[in-house]
Image (cartoon, rainbow, N blue to C red; front, side, top):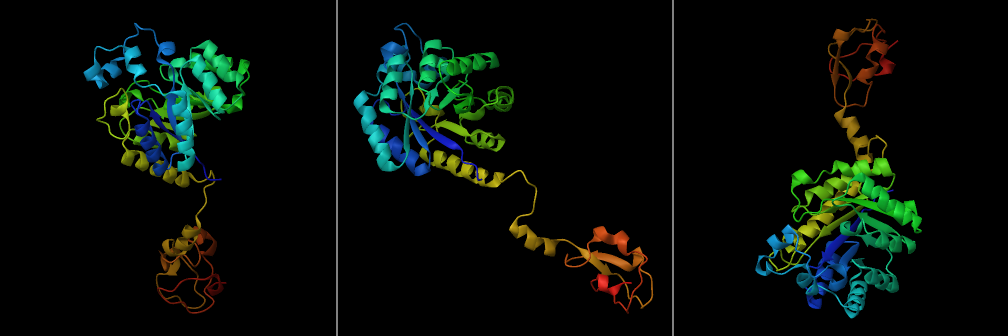
Length: 341
């Protein structure tokens, strides 16, 4: 069967707290062909303390608000509960699925109340045991991001999820590098394969590079889920816009991923139907390099390999050497088994 990679267009907080911008992001995700458009659900006061500083990338990406801490920044980016209902309904209208990541316990309960079908654990919560236990207790499919992790931390998180009720086959682990944007030298995409080999889980990739080539490569390597931030405009104010794809880039990424899915095929090396027709034209057959009289024995010097491949294959050469021509044969003609004794 043709592979279908689950593509999550990560709107995140790129709505800047504006419901109109959030709807426009849904429009873009739907138009690009994403499976899900994902937002973030949190109450700033329950997510960070009032002394929590911004990450370096947040300060770099929000130079106009350089003196604000995380709390002030995140308060401006919250979505209310009523916003969620409106966005869910709008996603239905646009035929793209709604998803959100919760960043605190109350927000997890709210998403559970909404009947969300997949729980996305962000990289920052992978060592939050109470959070993991609650997610596991919902017994729903889980996508686990692993930015900043070593393998032992991923194993511990999966163990906690499963102990709380999650099933192993319902956990997909995303390789991720928590830096916005991520330098190519920090991607370490082969680690995704190590996760699959060591943990026996479905794998995916959450990308923060500036381009689209790494998630495409991840699909070629076996990723079943791709998550990628996108925005209406990289120049908008906010912590994540600069490391996000603009609408045309998002569409190009998704188109390329779907092409790669088609190109992957199956594990069987065999000619396509088109190749079967071309094979007769492109391959060679045994032809006569000179005139041969009836009764002469065939030698290597009597033969030449030429297209088309409709006659005796050159791979059968040894089986016809020293056979006798049963009639006069002429230079340039295709040799057939009926010509020989």
